[in-house]
Length: 251
Ligand SMILES: Cc1cc2nc3c(=O)[nH]c(=O)nc-3n(C[C@H](O)[C@H](O)[C@H](O)COP(=O)(O)OP(=O)(O)OC[C@H]3O[C@@H](n4cnc5c(N)ncnc54)[C@H](O)[C@@H]3O)c2cc1C
Image (cartoon, rainbow, N blue to C red; front, side):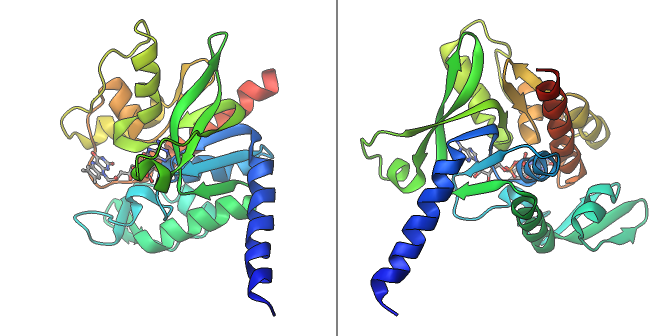
């Protein structure tokens, strides 16, 4: 075995995967619970989903669970059962291991056919004739080093902002389209019931071709924050996959 063969195997495989990811049905930005759930359910419906994650690891805020303890809480077991995560009943709530959830979501999303590219940061969106049609992407190390290096472009019929509290893609649009709603971004005070309900109810398209899922929904609509409960994130990801599949089917 030659060292160069190892390198060649990596370069060839990655290049092929990146090339395939350049055009897809849906780009999901952010591999937190909402983005990964969206990718899993999109892929399960037979759609080509690409997840772009700026960090080295997938899972977003899952790993920290609540107060840095690796346990997450949900209200129903539907998504956990679907992806094969063990859970325990705690009164009206269910608990599960954060590490198992992050690993299972990542594994099941890729196994279902989604392509996850980590260390890839979305720095802009592509908008043509009033429709979001892709993402402008750069490697995270390049962004961190603030190097003046051009990005690459990836095309998709739909893009999901699953970037969490910062709703980064929605903010990118706001900066360029002054008339674009919402005019301010940020969550309200903690209030778990309306937040868990609202994050799923208001998951959807905010601009032609741009959907919000997970905590970015709270940020965009000023919903209350809900603390360390993750069911809304998973159900939001599942819902955005259904909405996009229905929209694509109509097209
Ligand atoms: C300060 C703080 C407050 C919290 N408050 C709440 C709360 O109020 N309610 C609640 O339910 N949970 C809260 N959590 C817990 C947890 O973070 C969230 O519930 C959950 O992780 C949100 O899921 P998400 O999928 O929407 O986003 P996240 O888990 O945050 O995942 C977003 C992912 O997008 C990636 N990303 C961001 N921008 C880009 C980009 N430009 N390109 C590529 N990738 C990108 C991030 O690296 C991250 O992996 C909080 C966590 C913290 C640290």
